[in-house]
Length: 153
Image 1: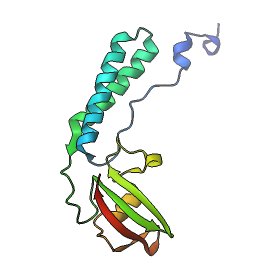
Image 2 (image 1 turned 60 degrees about the vertical axis):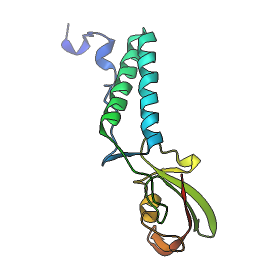
Image 3 (image 1 turned 180 degrees about the vertical axis):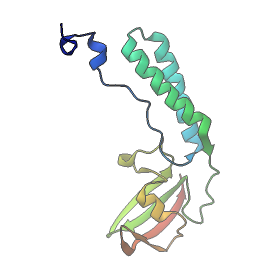
Image 4 (image 1 turned 45 degrees about the vertical axis):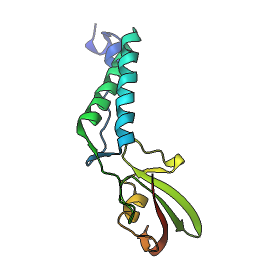
């Protein structure tokens, strides 16, 4: 029989499973972010002990490796002083006439729908270092964001 029609098994046709990609740059975290990482590791370790199905077990172990790497590279940042926008603070600002509020956090804590943006997000980068009353550039437009308040997270 021709080699072209030979079938070794279903495994050779499965998509390869890759490690979860790590965000580029430093792994800055708040104290709450560090605790979140530790909680996820504990949850995954408990899940792995209970799993029997091989595919789910491999996926859980892959996730555990990701979170263990995030824990080992975590750089806990000091509490912000509150005089200017910095990592870990809550910022109230006006953009296009709409008042919004965000918290600048690490990648693993980020939840944009809840107003928690990663420090590497364009909006967070634009606000970093600004003081109350200052106007900053954003999205190619000059002085489009007014910083209204810098608060503790």
